Image (cartoon, rainbow, N blue to C red; front, top):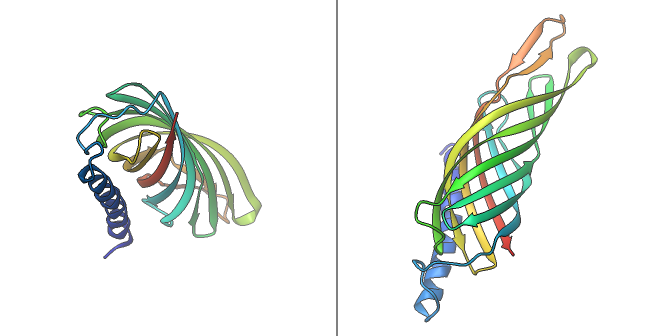
Length: 196
């Protein structure tokens, strides 16, 4: 089993565990999983982020997300993450700041699937051979989907997938020729949110 498949399995297991806990609450007389939830206008939370670039190392990183829910079928998310990739002797530190529009086709239920799309600004520092040190600002789009499990009206857990398209990272090798690295890739997040 590849790492990517393992990550997807972990994310699905996380959502399944949340679903089972909600089902058990539903069976004990509380609201069931198909009922609407009132989660307030605003949520904030932390998340674990797995990034698998086309070139470079795949790993887990950390981040945070903020969401505004103006209506039952829509949310706007802002997020900040950290990640590091190594391309041979070149090391890249990125701080993705993403904005996403999230559409909940079924509305906000105890278990709510969503689709998302948006863009991001990636503050990137690159160090490489020959003392190369550069700061770059890149932009990229993303699309994906996921599921959000509302444990209560004030706490939710979510898992999401995004495919990310980015401008290439520029570096210089030892002979001072330009080199570009492609870190388009796949991003999986697992988060815990607190709603107000």
